[in-house]
Length: 114
Length: 111
Image (cartoon, rainbow over all chains, first blue to last red; front, side, top):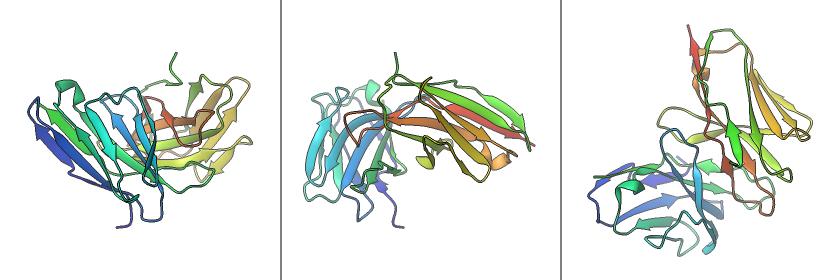
């Protein structure tokens, strides 16, 4: 499978715990994105990497959230001190560095904070 | 005002029917437009890009009206497999990476 892969697919955690998600983009794509989606809403942009550089962070990304892409390949999204409001689907997408911004999404990590 | 607004539906149509719906976007300088399809509890998948001249892909036709700032999607000869949520997506001006999604329009095709 050469698509975007995310791990884990589901994560249940208790409030206050830290969680980390991983995203492996399509191999030739140098752009990587994280989105969050809650029920009944479209995905909301969280952050964007071009290669290893994090070029934009949404105001939705509080200081409890951190994302990395250390070698310009896979990325991790960490949430510290999780809150119930963090419960959502976290989607990763990637795209090639071309003018037409077509993004390909992974299956997502569904986070439930109890 | 939200960047992208859609009628949530649901649109319930019989097989073979035609269904059409719109979305509106707030920033007149937006450059790129897309329709993505999302099945229940799955990831969004690109259905089609939307070009200024309008474009067609099989049973699907997309139109862009820049003057009124709306995008439409028309599905002809609906199939059961067309049942999904259709997300209107806009690339705001000033960057070529961030996508703004509408909340989606749900279409259910019944036998």
